[in-house]
Image 1 (cartoon, rainbow, N blue to C red):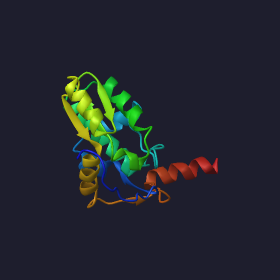
Image 2: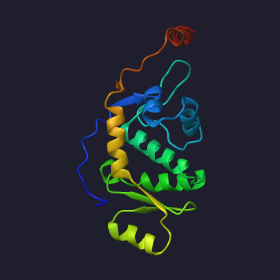
Image 3: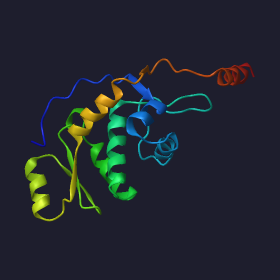
Image 4: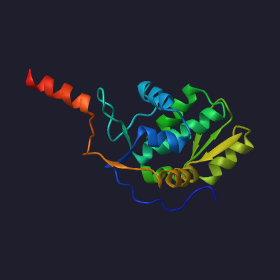
Length: 170
């Protein structure tokens, strides 16, 4: 069955730093930074603000990033991926586990039932699919051994702290 299954409760205050996200997804930090700069997927817990600050990605962000990577790996255009992400953001976190993305390489279709998937395949539009619930479990497993960080503990390196102190003294 493509749809269904329970998803765990998510802590929206705990996230993962960029290097941990890169390890979990198998991408470079440069790629992660690029996707943030172009607005493809940005961290929802904490964005980078100047030198020494660290982005903090929520589980949902990482799930969407994993879907982005899968779509790119299969040759889907960035424009189509952007459209698919737009559709995914309309769904709540819990609802994402019940979504399957289908693609024919040119377009991406969001399916929420087995019948929609079957209709696409019978119409010749679905060449491959990504069951977001399965990706959810993969990401959960990959992140289980990586360090997390609470949103309120925004670490700043020594140089950034001195710069901030100097700005505040002026």
